[in-house]
Image 1 (cartoon, helix red, strand yellow):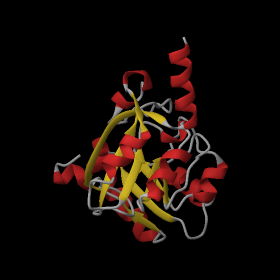
Image 2 (tube, helix red, strand yellow):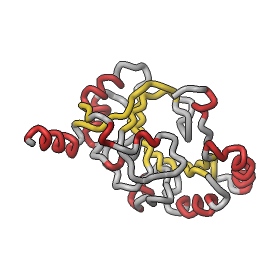
Image 3 (cartoon, one colour):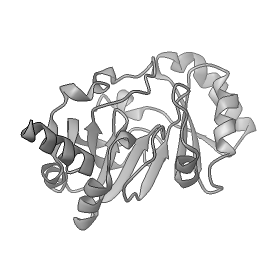
Image 4 (spheres, one colour):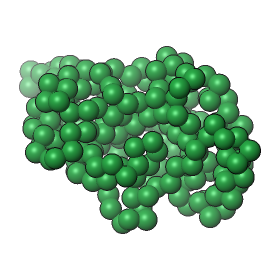
Length: 212
């Protein structure tokens, strides 16, 4: 019982996190697409998008609690000093410790989040990708550097505009087709962006490049 309570304490402090995977790759989506970065995927998500392509990340219990110090050490072994924390839903956890340790190693900190929970940590870039099943908190909308809306059907354009009105004026706006509907949605996205040039188009370029 004492060991279990210690584990819970380390998780609550963010000293250990349920790590699904970590890998060095090229960022495939959004504003930083094409740049190398170390990805840290944290297990655990209750947002429940039906089109999620990493459903294996949802159950935090199947991903081992891993010392953040070891994760940071691994990230520091690669030439690109940039880390993307993703999930799952990383905002479920206390991310202050991991971001502080990354910054202590002069590593930039990027996060991909739905914004469903209040975000903790020290971030150089916050990519907010809202989901209808668990809408983002207003506080997260105000601090987002990038709003990336996944377009699954034509009604999503109106939904995207709703959140574009709630982010800051300098927040970068992206529309990205849901992968399984990309052929159907891409002509609609192109037409919408041509009429609404504040928006940009994001593609899952890592899938075209066949990399993680």
